[in-house]
Length: 457
Ligand code: TYD
Ligand code: MG
Image (cartoon, rainbow, N blue to C red):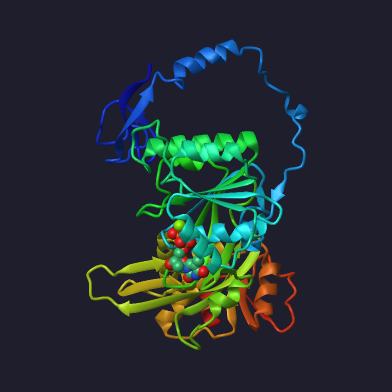
């Protein structure tokens, strides 16, 4: 007999408890326990599963590692090189990919657009719980998608989705979105922790057993994390975030987790009136519209995965009117920016303690690489001294606490990109770069400390 039981799940970590508490005992988050009804004792109850497992003893045995046949993993090319690179060279057949992002950023557009290529020799089922079939058709017309292999289902009931899949199994399944999908066996509302867990589990089982490559769309919450329990991210093979400012047309796709590739790669897209367009040369896009000869602006060369990218870091320092100065860092780690301010003060004698400091990375890019240290420090120094760095100067290098500059990886690759974009001067760390040959037309300015770098501007 199926019985209904009241339990509480933590929104953050999926912890389950029979009683409500203000603080989750597992992850320590406050006010995250939500009420949910689960059905126990039914056909899927743990009791029956244990019974079945006992009956299966001896039927399934462990296999020696070297006896497991992996074959060659099949990669499915989505036809969008930027997405393929972020996935680590196309989507692995039978994998589960979660695409998260703010509403209106272009998740549905991206997934409908990859159908263009996917449908060439595969069958794709697009399940939308958010839009009607007519709306999807209008969007497909807008992005000029014409194919016989794309099937659209407007459905939110998990059982109906699973039935449609087993009736006519597709090669690729797209679920838009996991938060609107619900299992009628659970009484909890769609989008709640238990529903998301249950639906993802069922879809994961389907992807792994039938080898159906599945793309899930996930909403994100106010803090920018994927809505739903953390277990959602543990269950899937890849977590991709689609980011960008809705005021800009540019969108950046970033891998947060990837079981089949690196998480350093980014893909850049531009939202146009006919859908998303790939941006193969992000540096040109990030540097367009740069002000000429103003202080506080510095071009940094950073490495995103295997790709060098040039981006502009801007700093603005104004005399403060508050007791404690305001410090704002957008696009780079706040603590890293504070550390650079401290190094500038102690090692280069640039005092910014009576100034409000604003640092911004142009184009919505987020810099996490240490190579962005020196350009960020130079933009602050340039703003403070009111001395422009120059339009054709690019900078990279890691800054140590003693004010020393450390070498960064792939310096040669960076120099090639800097020269390709027509820069004629590059300020870089002396250490480890003495053997580097300068590309034609690029002057290398090797420096060993922040203070020495500042003297070069
Ligand atoms: P959408 O894919 O619906 O976002 P999400 O699924 O992440 O919520 O994107 C919708 C936005 O993109 C909407 O504001 C309109 C815009 N858009 C274009 O600018 N050009 C297009 O060709 C399409 C299809 C959408
Ligand atoms: Mg959508």
